[in-house]
Length: 149
Ligand SMILES: C[S@@+](CC[C@H](N)C(=O)[O-])C[C@H]1O[C@@H](n2cnc3c(N)ncnc32)[C@H](O)[C@@H]1O
Figure 1 (cartoon, rainbow, N blue to C red):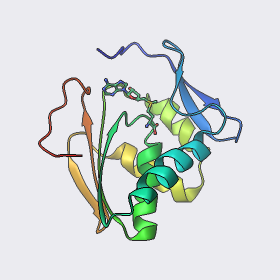
Figure 2 (cartoon, helix red, strand yellow):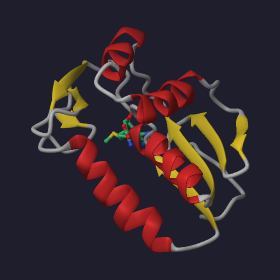
Figure 3 (cartoon, rainbow, N blue to C red):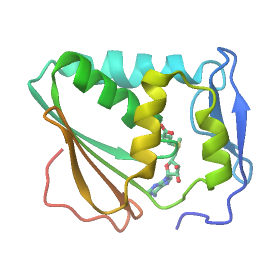
Figure 4 (cartoon, rainbow, N blue to C red):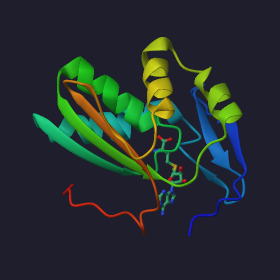
């Protein structure tokens, strides 16, 4: 079971982008060297882009800050690539911390981050012709879905 007594703090990584550290388990949400560049490199460039598919379904364990989903939404809209994105998390980041985290981003990513964080849990949203999104507040152990990923 996920530890809900988290101690989350923002840290600034070497490329000057922020990430979150859970001090209780000494785990960072992204690379401490280059949080934003790592997400772009691993999740988008070597993940989503390489699939090279007209319709992509993503299942992410750990919505976290929402950075991966925000970058995927940007990719979907820019490339007119239809993406259905489903993510789960049980541990929420407190409002004051996520609001502080937002301050490090330029408008292009910020607007997606704010939107995806603001959306209600356990609802599906068709945010554009190219991006469908749902976040579920649950653990991987308890998550049930009939969708195939
Ligand atoms: C490394 S962070 C993910 C970072 C996230 N992808 C982002 O872009 O910010 C890991 C996340 O997974 C969540 N998590 C860890 N174990 C989980 C589980 N068993 N079920 C659901 N979420 C889990 C944590 O609460 C945390 O938010």
